[in-house]
Image 1 (cartoon, rainbow, N blue to C red):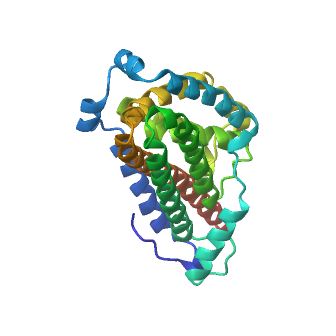
Image 2: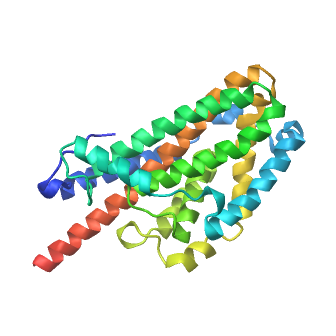
Length: 285
């Protein structure tokens, strides 16, 4: 990701924001392409369904209900914004800022990167610990990695100024998580849907009602996430050897989740800044 220089008042210039937006769009284009390894590693669903242990199916089924609770009211997965705000302020002061918003995009990027690295390291250790016991401890890893995924998405969203206390933001977080685990066809559909939903200034168009209506059938959405997730966790069911697969899988999953979150929230903040600049230019003419 290109380092941004600071414009007047500490915020980016319009041209810098446009270049940053092009970077995000390039990343989105890459996500729409099907990688060769995805073709090779994608197991047919019926075979995957037979190979996946019953305890995994049961645990993921339970998590579907918990995700419904998260979307409706935040549930157990909702994060507090205070610590994230303190981190962004700390990064701002380290770079010569005052430690208060509005923050330059570069400051928000750095805070998001630090959170991403921290959560990925934690997920690696979590996967190694639970992978050691194979299928017997995998059931404990599933809610842990899902909770950590939602946590890092919300935290990165907070870095860019988007509050998960709002229902439409929680729906957006679930879609980010889905995007990170989907294969190319699914990624294309999700990115196109998100493009349609993003209104003026990077806001989710239509407010809460529209956001909820656009994720009708969210159980099917998360079921697709489950199918992709199960294929990645399958080798973790082997005792002892699962420790290595668990560490690697969890690290890669969290890295993918954090990258998707950073790019999509970054895009929304850039669009908001460009919108603000456009309004200022209109008022000055």
